[in-house]
Image (cartoon, rainbow, N blue to C red; front, side, top):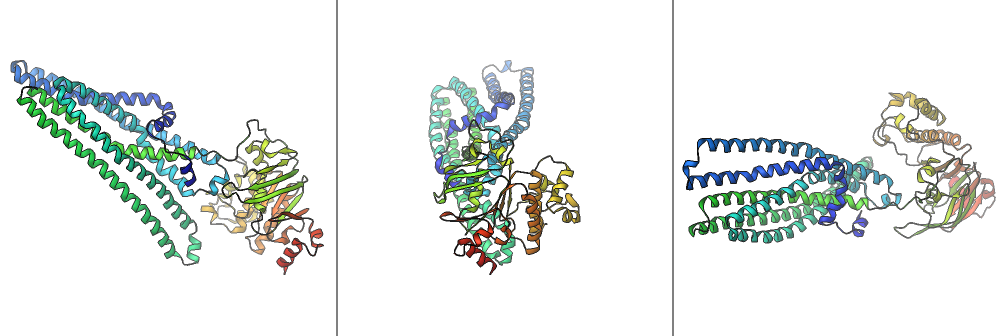
Length: 590
């Protein structure tokens, strides 16, 4: 995500609100009612000084007019307003917060959906911990931001405008003097607010780095323990934790400066009212009742400003979180469907590489150059060669995990870029060396190959993969929980479940990426038997380091930095005693 932050400039002020507005629209009725309730609570706060002003004015001018009945009616009216205020406040705190949670849920839905759309190269260069931080911690901060931002802005605007009008009625000069302090307060507060926002963003980024560190260490905890490197992991964590602490310290210093400045101006404004108001009253420029009301309104105004200042911290967190959300949402998938992309229907399985070259965009390193290859339907092709020669990359181009830099890959004569991604990939099955097991049961993991498949279909696929027997012996059979990443299963068991998953998918094109290289001899034998069943009648690409497993392939391609340097059957390649394949095979079987 570091590259993302360089590409995009931070959203500012109104731009953030503009980007955020679409998430408010579905809840506009709730929002308008919330703002109406905010107006009611504001009115209640503004009425009390008027009541006090009326009472003190009556006492000083015509005490006889102030009867018990009048006082009781004023008290009853104010209590009624307070009941309305309580109901309005309850709505704001309950339904308003639910609205904020719904907006957060919508943001999280869109972000997760966007994660699913992003291409492999994005995940090649992005830490999962950073993405987890954005979808959890960042979006949590947006709940309060989404709910309180409109109502707090409305409340402070109403109170400032109404207070200004009422205070001008008492003393225009005093009001102008008091309000002249506000721009200074805003100026100095804004300076700290910018620093605070930057530190919030740095804190969020570093929290993602910390999450990545923890995830990396805990995911590899068995490797850590096997090398007795617990202390090394503690040191790495302590270093990252120390960086996070340093950023948090700076963040809190900025927060303290922000709040201290506003507190200072708060005191300055209040003492100005007391001193100047007293002077004005001495000179008869303001009456005692007006002065009392003036003090109450200024107190209300300052309380409102103080509340908004406190909310500003929350506002900065919310805006920072939304910026980070927006950064990811502006990441476009590098693999795009053409506007006129077609659905892939029936597939024979002929695959052609027409002068294909490929280089990773991030490094510009050329991996494949001018690859020309034609594979017939149902043909079994094996790829061998040194590590880094591009075997996995070549196979990854078929389902468009990456796009060719130049040239074209065709299936049954059609460029793979002409098909929709979903239909293309639904006709290709991949069995990898590192099998990923999702959290859940054995049944859930096999069903992943064909969501919604019946139990009978799943069991049939498991039998074809040679997995039914060991699954039946598990504690709960197909309903056995596999543990995180399938920790309760052996490597061979996980591999056969992954093969069952592909059997259930039943694709016409198959890619086997070193599917047996990490297994022991017995597991390899069982998995190889399953793979031979799976390969039957399908166009198959097999990437293998164990050369004995590919002797029966129809065609073997030897891939090096120079491209495909040899191709033919096992017998044909072994007949070339000076060939690369012959040398590799001799080294492997020596």
